[in-house]
Length: 151
Image 1 (cartoon, rainbow, N blue to C red):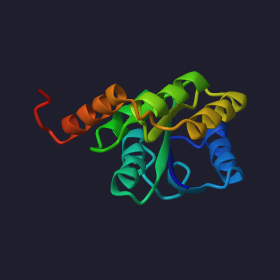
Image 2: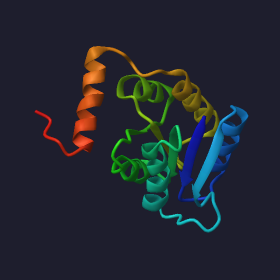
Image 3: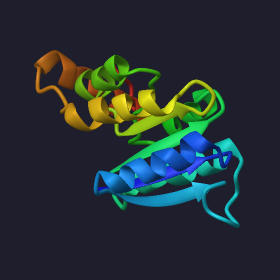
Image 4: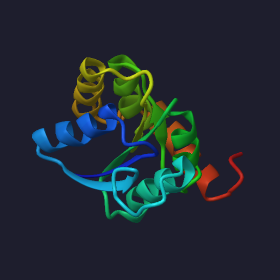
């Protein structure tokens, strides 16, 4: 899988993320502080990673900043992106399963290496729910992205 990865800081967790994705057989496309010369502001590098997902040139993305909040906000401004800030495996599983999240947001401050591996395990193992209610919610979010009235 091609995974777009952004981080506003070149931190050990971000480097571990890239290495772990490689160990799992994924191709990482780097943005921000992980790619020399890129704009490392969290809004800019998160947007760049999210745009690749929206355009279909990346299958998914992982966006990182100190808290993960700014990266998730910026990524979610890109139509077609459903970014979820996950601090544990249970949240990552639910984000993929119930929300069909296509962008994982991580906190560089709160994510340890063991947590990172658990989050990635859950993220990649989960599949989007086919339950009618779950699909209806994801479709509603898509209509919001398109600027269409929801009701």
